[in-house]
Image (tube, rainbow, N blue to C red; front, side, top):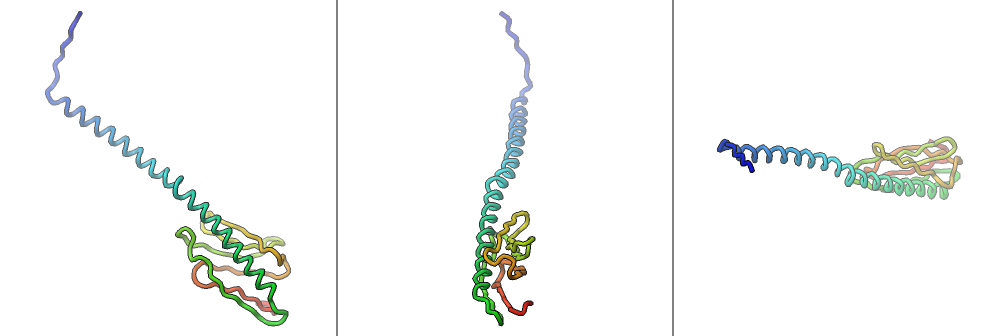
Length: 149
């Protein structure tokens, strides 16, 4: 049986522990930063985008219904207008509403950044041309004039 005894410097234990602490702390800090970016994208932005899309569909359906309702009571000779309010923001962000003709179909497009919802204006088809745009801020107006604009 052999026994090996080596000499050690008296201050080596403190340096070894300090280096281990710094290396492990650096690795854990790096992993925490990566996790924060990942968690933000997965747990916050994804659900917020889903919320925006479904809110945009609801807003588009509401505007489509208001346009059809106004069309139903529109006079043969004269003008009519209605004021309505839609949410000022959705999930903390502004959005844009555009009503336009897409081929033979009239559509309400609600969008903000990459999130876009398109809703067809049901019931009036291409009989009356509907155009215009608005945002969620303030009161919004739908106008009809039998002579056109």
